[in-house]
Image (tube, rainbow, N blue to C red):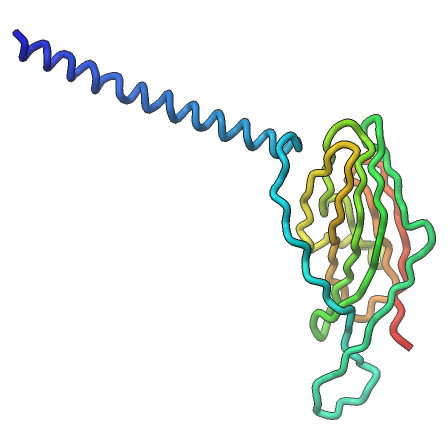
Length: 197
């Protein structure tokens, strides 16, 4: 009699174990989903990343004759046009983009890297995206997407700085930086890329 009771008790325990495991798995999945949503909406802070190392702006000096030695590098300046602050509507508030720096860097024999250091200020009551999707570079009317992989969330009434980078042909002399998410309000800022004199 006791052996039958022991077998029944053991059978019931093993029959409920899958149910217990399923409940634990569902709970873990729900908690992980909640944490992911809280991170995306900005309720939980993202881990801070170390700032990228500063690279001296330089590009190959193609004006000198080829002497068989490695090409020297010269700084390449970009004149920032006036009005480097852009204020775009964001819900009932605004998102303010401030271009802090623009620079050209050597990339390879066919391309250069054009980088913008930008501060994003979220003048609204909810978190907002600060990402590559809000930027395009127009070269002869054709839009070019960034290669920088910027993807940040800026909390309400807060600011963050980020870098937007494009790879452009070496002979590019004029570009237009378009700021604004697709289908939303946007603005365009022209840049003249000048070689060192």
